[in-house]
Length: 110
Image (cartoon, rainbow, N blue to C red; front, side, top):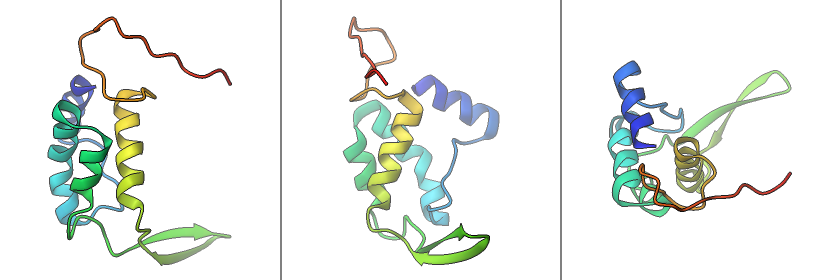
């Protein structure tokens, strides 16, 4: 997981940055994600994303071919934290170390 973040930063200069993040949030996001991966979890990433000025006040979306604007959802920090950590570590229920610790995670049957 951390190695994937390092690889993204080497290749593109930074990981994927959500359009929901403000310019300040986009600048601080890579470090917040790294800290959550190393020493934290979804909650610590969510707390960092909940800080003042981290998210845009509104977001645009498209419905029926019409671009619209809406106020940023108040749960956006939680959604971003959950989605971003899962995207970087898979569907594991909690952060796992880069080194195999003998722990196995089973995905639910679909």
